[in-house]
Image (cartoon, rainbow, N blue to C red; front, top):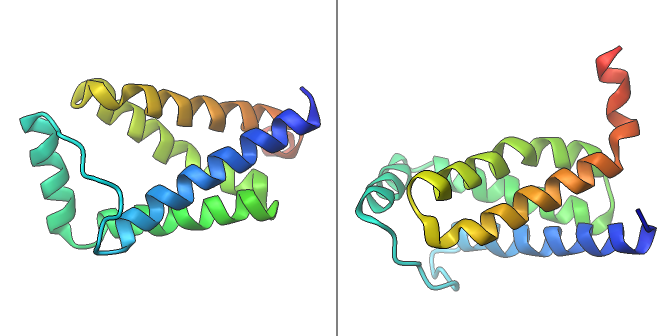
Length: 126
C-alpha cells in the first residue's frame, strides 16, 4: 500500500473519531441525533443513563483520533479502537441499519490500518 494512501486513511479515520468523540462529550451535540429504531433508541438511552459509558467511549475516540492525526502510538491506538469499531458495526447490523455504511467504513479503515502496521503486532504472537 502506498504511504500517501495510508496517511490519508489514518487522517480521515482520526478526523471522524475526533468529531464523533467530541459529539459524545460536548453537551450541545453539534451533530444532529439520528432517528433510531425503538430498540436502538432504548439501547442508546440506557447507555446514556449509565452516566459513563458514552462519555468513556467519547474520550477513547477522541484520544485515538488525536493519536492517529499526530502519528503517535498509531499501532496502540488502532488496537484500542478495534473493539469499539466492532461494536459500532454490530450495533448498526442488529439495531440501526441506516447507519451501517459509516460503521462499515470505520471498521474497514481500522482493519486496513491494522494490516498496514501488522509488523508492530507480530511480537505479540511469538
